[in-house]
View: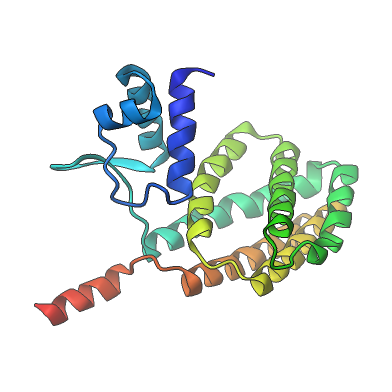
Amino acid sequence: MKASDRAYDTLLNEIIDWELPPGSVLAEVEQSVRLGVSRTPLREALARLTADGLVAQQAGRGLVVTDISIDNIRELFEVRRALEEQAARLAAERGSTEVFAALEREFLSASDLLSDTDPGRHAYYDLVRRFDEALDDAVANPYLVTAMRGLRTHLVRIRRHAKDDSARLRSAASEHLMIVQAIVARDPELAAHATHVHLYRALENALATSHFHNPETDAGRAQLSA
């Protein structure tokens, strides 16, 4: 693996896992030493993270990990709806029935995975990852797939910071099952509708259980303290 790819993967995972929280300064010299790469591949990695929207230049501080607000979450889900609802339609038209029928059988028993133990949850997350991959393959549109993959990086970052309780995960599994069944039935509009319901509930959960700052609330607090 190239040094720039290794540095990018490490920093990406640290940002997604909140080991590098918003506001963390990514100084070239410090990160170069820490990651064991020279400054040229590090700059390439930081440029990719900047293009991903995970890192940005901040006056007086240099490159920092970007913040996430309630507004950011809403904006991401607006884009997510447009992309994933269309992807579900295309998957229902173009996808392999055998592939999605196999996923359907797994989602039917997904509740068995969703105990409070980490292994069960990891197995469920892996099932969702494989569903995403099957969806990407089914749409047969590289532009749509690239856009969805770029968005998922931010969504995973949000998900890792929000509370993911067992009840919500079981609901999400049922919602995924409805999407898969609509795709197997070759019903594009039902697949899009099931996706819309899933994303609506996912957004409501993210807003209700996350601890991201709210610009409106923050502004109100600033006025009260002034």
